[in-house]
Length: 395
Image 1 (cartoon, rainbow, N blue to C red):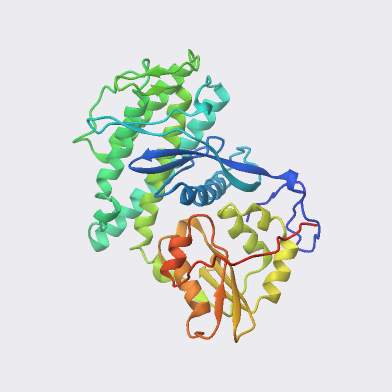
Image 2 (cartoon, rainbow, N blue to C red; image 1 turned 180 degrees about the vertical axis):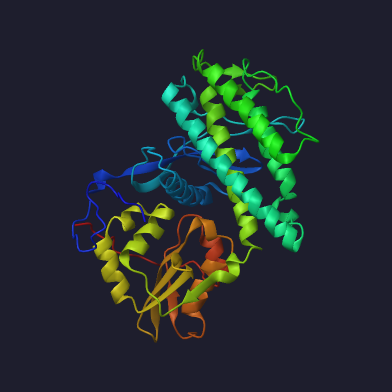
C-alpha cells in the first residue's frame, strides 16, 4: 500500500473529499503498429512501459495496467519518478514499425526520443536498470532452485517462449546490441556464447553502463541512422533498454508462477471482503487511479455489494469481482480486477465464475474495459447494442 497517494487523498477511509479531475492527467500511449507483427504501445513519460497486443484497443487497457505495475515497482524501490494520477488512457499518436524485405523490423523513433539526455535522466535510468538486474538475478536463483527440484522450466512454444537460459543470454546480448546502434556506441569486446551465464550478464552490463556514460557526455539528441535506415538517439536507447529489462523480468516471473506453487497458493473466497486500503492498492496496481482516489466511496461499495469474490495470495489481495444483484433476475458485474503479476493464471475467469455459475435465471451485465470484449465473450457474455447508462457525477 503506497504511503502517499497525492495531496488530496489520504489513507483515512473516512475522508469524504473526492479529488477534482484536474488533479489527474491522461495517460498518453504511442501506438506502434507492426511491432513484432502486432501492435506495440509505449508510454514515454513512464520509464519501461511497453505492451504488445493484437489490437490498438487492447494495447490501451494493457498500457494502463503496465503503468500501474511499473509505478508500483518504482515506488517499492524508492524511485521518485513523477508519474501523475491517471484520469484516462488516450492515444498520443501512431508511428508504425516498417518491416524490411529481409524481415528486419525498423522500429519507431518517438517524438519524445528527439532530445539530448541530461545527467539526471541518465543516472535515473542506470539506477532502474540496476534494480531490474538485481531482481532478474534473484529470478535466476529461483529458476535454478526450481529446476534442480523439478527439472527444466516448461517452455510454451505457442507463446513464443524459449529455454530460460536462452532468455537470460538474450537479455545480455540485446543490451549490447542496443548500445551499439549509436555511432559512438562501440563494439562489445567480449563474447557472450560459451561464457558462464552470470559472467556474461555481469560483463555485458558493466560495458553497457560505461558506454552510456561516455556517450552522454557528448550527446546532442540528433538522430543517427543505422545501416537499415532506423534512426537512433541516446534517449531511444534508454527507453528500449528499460522496457526490455522489465519485459523479460516479468516474463520469467510469469513462467515461475506457473510452476513454483503460486497458482496453488492463490485462494478464492466469497466470504472474505477486503478493506478499503487493500482495494486502493489493487486498483492503483492496474492504473485505476480515479477509483483508487475515493477510499470512502470504496468502503461503502464494499459494504453494500451483494456478492463479493476475492482472490488472495496469503494476506495479499490480488483479485476482485463484485455482483450487485437482486438474486433472481438481474445483476451487474463490476470491479473485475487482477493484479498484473497474477494475470494469465485464470484468476479473473475463476472470480467471474464464482459469481455467475449456478445462476442461470439471472441476466448478468457489465462494462468491459477497452479491448477485453473478446475475453468476456469467452466467458459467455455477448454484446448488447441497446445498453445505456447514466454517467456518474463526481462531487
